[in-house]
Amino acid sequence: MGCTPAFLENGLHCHGASFHNGKTVLGHHRFDNVASPYNFGLMIPQVDTERLLIEHLQSFGVTVERQVELTLFGEAPDHVEARLKHADGHEEAVQTSWLIGCDGAHSTLRNGLGFSFEGVTDPSDWLLADIRLEGDHQTPSDQIAAFLHPDGPFALFPMAKGRTRIIAGFSKSSGGKSKPNPTLQDVQDLTDKRVGRGWLVTDPVWLANFYINERKVSEYSKGRIFLAGDAAHIHSPAGGQGMNTGMQDSINLAWKLALVVREEASPRLLDTYTPERSEVGAKVLHNATLMTELGTLKSPIAQATRDAVMRFMFGFHSVQEREATSFTEIELDYSQGLLTVGARAGGRFSPRYYDGPPPGIGNKPRFVLFTSDYEQGAAFASRFPGLLDPTPRISPDRKRLLLVRPDGYVGLSATDNDWAAAEEYLRQLVITG
Image (cartoon, rainbow, N blue to C red):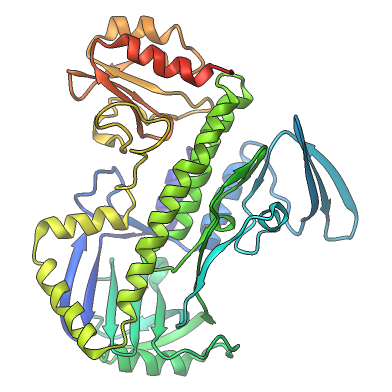
């Protein structure tokens, strides 16, 4: 998108995660071997993420309007009508080709569509604190540290400018009753009890209690109306998967919508949004729920078993790498998707094989052709100027012809001379019947 440098400058590079029980290290994994030019977690507050994205939008002449409420909407065959209420009370009627609800867990759009937000409320209580941590940390300042305690998990997330975010869970619940926000002394007492390393918590900027809902819609769209992000799925913060998953929803929808709006692909392409992202959303929710359940086990026997298994499993390098790929979400794929054709298709195409800029870069998202026959590939690409990048690239497997989607996933995998398969794949994208 062109805004990477600003994010890298404002965030802290996190190179791994470790798991502890008191002073005992149960295991760790690092991100160094993750197949990405950015093989680290970028720890950056959401407020900075929003600020940087808004500044990037402004460079395109786009302004985000705050305190504007969607009060009513309705779909016609070729557009959507919406009514908006502004902060000063005046109302505005808007007619738009498409309406996308990124309006969070209490989504007005989702409720207006009548979509069921199925799931449960986690019975545990949770605490969040953004503070400074002083003392001999004994854990690297560039790693997440999770402490598993009989009373619940206690996780430290390093942030830029020397700050730390604490998230802690409690096995005993208040039963959903409203609780006052914690004090700094509450956080200090919790740190002493769960970690016990003589650390001092200071300079709080955010102290809060919260509850976890684990919910998801079954459909992400209806006609010309779509849902993305927390409007479609919410879950535990375990693993830090929420915002990334929501952004991936938007990326998946954006390149498809762009091709349809430009009439370079059939509107049927948008029918692939729900099945692809719903499957990913279900997997992310499952993983986050599982991590939460493992961290909040109440039985001492179950806790001891968990700790022993973790110490054993994390002794294997393959397990450490598996955890890193799961944590960073690069293992997610569309192998069962409607746009996936051929053996080994559907997975994320490794950046080490890009042989040029990332697929989908620029203002016009296009597929990228990878083949060993550059001349024939260029001739083939010229027949699909709206769908294919004009410059083919060298396939990492000289025996395979690949079509990589604008979001970096392999759409088609065929034998290198199977131009008929490539043509059939692209023709299906433009057929309107």
